[in-house]
Length: 579
Image (cartoon, rainbow, N blue to C red):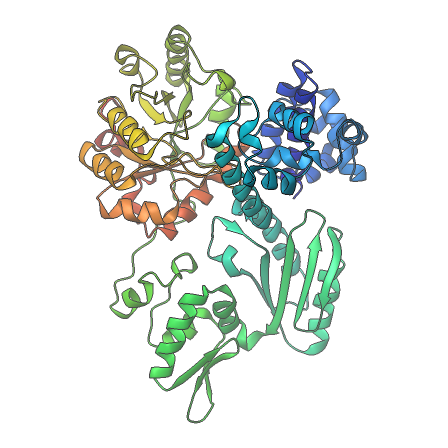
């Protein structure tokens, strides 16, 4: 799937144009990048199905940008991008991916200190040469070092939402082979970790000849750029996108044991193996064996493996040695929320602010997903970069949404807003406007470097407002781009439980916020949750199950998640909703 690659290309072009002080074009390229970034289908497949015209159907992509995307997809290169890069010192574009320094600062760093690479930037920051530059200072120097750390971590791991479609496509191809008996994604991706280092896939067959045919197919897939290793039981390839994929092939009789073993986590497996040893058993990737006779007693399925050791089956998402084995022994495993069980989305955007699609498009897409309801929550005026609406514009927009809702059948449309939580804790709209909204999502979009005390006070003050329904992406992080802001989450959870404010699990691949460990802790306070996509396009709505994966890793049950409930139950959780 080339979506992240194409989106990054467009973002890089925007940054280079901005460094050249080109007007208007950077905004257009960033809008196109966001459109590609939130596209759930493969842009390469989209292009193959309908050419440039099909690309131009995507929001924010006109003829010129469509031509450039097509050239990149056809040739793997873009001459316009290469031409722009030639105007800058070699490797300087790498600096664009470091959080905390924009195009103008990059230019200043190059002009004043000759900095061209991330390693040079890090050395300059550690020797305190940055703090001597005008407009920098010690605090910014420290923030840049943190940003370099975020950048390095992001280089090593890929957000689940971008890697999973690639893995699923390969999985489906392998399933189509006659030599294959069973196939499954394994490893951290099977456990739905928020980021993955590589992709692990397990397949089963019978016989050496079948295994060789599978490996021949796998290592010659068109998206493979390099074969790292090829054997009869394991092969590794590097895809053109930079992702590594490892395929293991086992005998079908051992498929369950191998899947349990290679899915992990390592800590979970250690505890399970220790339990097996205590019962006179031996557990490995081939099966469960009696230690006394080496007789194999289980291995074909994971359920069979766990049962042989005296355990109930544990879903992959909770296999982290965080109490799941003890719960299985006591028969107290939680009933986890199911994929596909969400009935609506409370956080979406349209072209009225920074979204790519119209209201009617978002509603039609939600209907197609089988939703009972959707909330339209465009930005408040504080988000200038996202074209937030003024008080007057929002009031008019709310009326338009409600008028559309009155005419729409088969789905309920809620009129709301993603309202900025201002530095003083006030919401970005006055109360007389907030009370006209069905749904108010409050979020922090500024001053991310505030102290822990300042940010905690800011959010707690906002939670005093009786119109606030949902605290959106509660830590403000962007994976690989921005660290979470400092905040006392325990105080936030306590206040949310007391005031019955819902906590958002944001399903966007780069947010995954709240993360699983925080959501699980919030549940212990008695908090309730919504899982939202924060969609800025119709395709973004399809990321919902990534949020469900976070909820499952947090041990959340269906009762913990409000938008798993039918429309008729929503007034119990939203003060202003009238059905």
